[in-house]
Length: 108
Image (cartoon, rainbow, N blue to C red):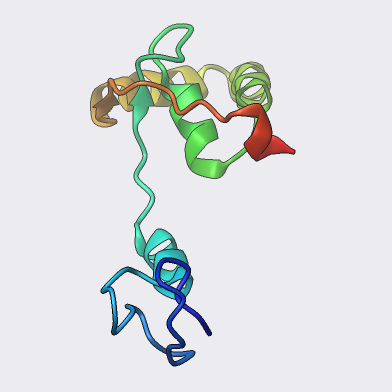
């Protein structure tokens, strides 16, 4: 394997380049997977409180699917989903950060 920064040949198991000290692609991919996912209410993508959008981001699905499931669950459970939603409003921490925009080049 070669360092993408300086071009020095390094071991395949190396996490950092021995010449320039930069992170290898192996280490960058491993560190992205090591980050634990957290469940937040999203203040920037909300209809009422951001619970559905936070759950959709956590589960990595479309927010519309979650919202339809919540409405269907409300009618099927006799209102228990509404109580769970209200509890989630108070339990889930709020993420007030800016949404991550994916550029058109990254999607292609």
